[in-house]
Figure 1 (cartoon, rainbow, N blue to C red):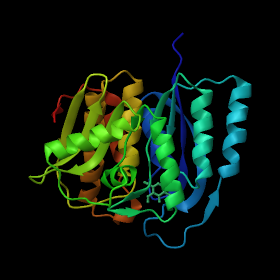
Figure 2: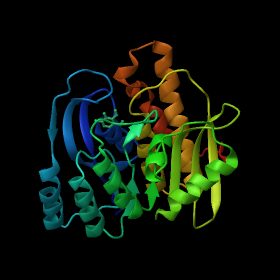
Figure 3: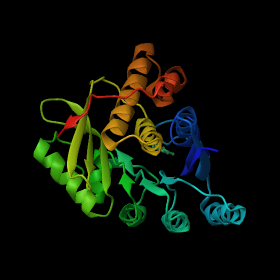
Figure 4: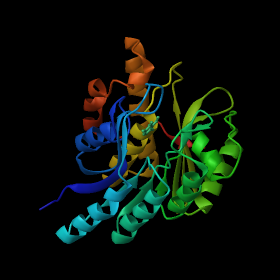
Length: 286
Ligand code: PXL
């Protein structure tokens, strides 16, 4: 009997605003992967401009949750971490990684965007996030998070191919054999998702259409599609292409409705696209 692929998704649950577990769970389900949510915090909304957020930290939930799964003898094919709410949560993520040494280790080092750290991500958490990145097989930072990980001032200026390759290489030298950088503006005005596969020493890029709008949660959407795609047997460039095409579809669809950007992308309209599992070929060598 084929068992469903199972992922522990260690991320926050923001009720309104379509980010983190609220988008990750439906995406993985529709891709045929069982997602087990391990919330790091529950919030009324994301923290991107929707006023006074009601939040409960769940740092003390993570270890007992892992203990219960171990008592049950549950196995996981992937441990996937994202938004963490305290530096101590890095230690708990490492406990999950140690408990499932054969699982694919994916770290989305959620720390900031548009050149700035999220309110909850203080320097202590930024530092400990590097520890988690060192233990990962695959990481999916955006440009801002890339700068934090490489101890560089936040600089979002467009990249040449050689600058992009050197960033990917330096991130990989921290530990992960697969590196994906999301939302990278390249010289010439192209927006791209970049990838590096150390085992095959290949650099990849998937170009996206530029749409003049920005929505919270699109980084979470990209990372979730990459997780679902890689677990289903896709290569890194196909996984990046699937994530990039899907993120573009959600952004383009939402832009056409002229909604409040803080409410996130119209995921519900776009989810069926992920069920087609068509092979994509719009990736190229960087
Ligand atoms: O999408 C990243 C993210 C995750 N979790 C929370 C956030 C954000 C971005 O604003 O506020 C709580």
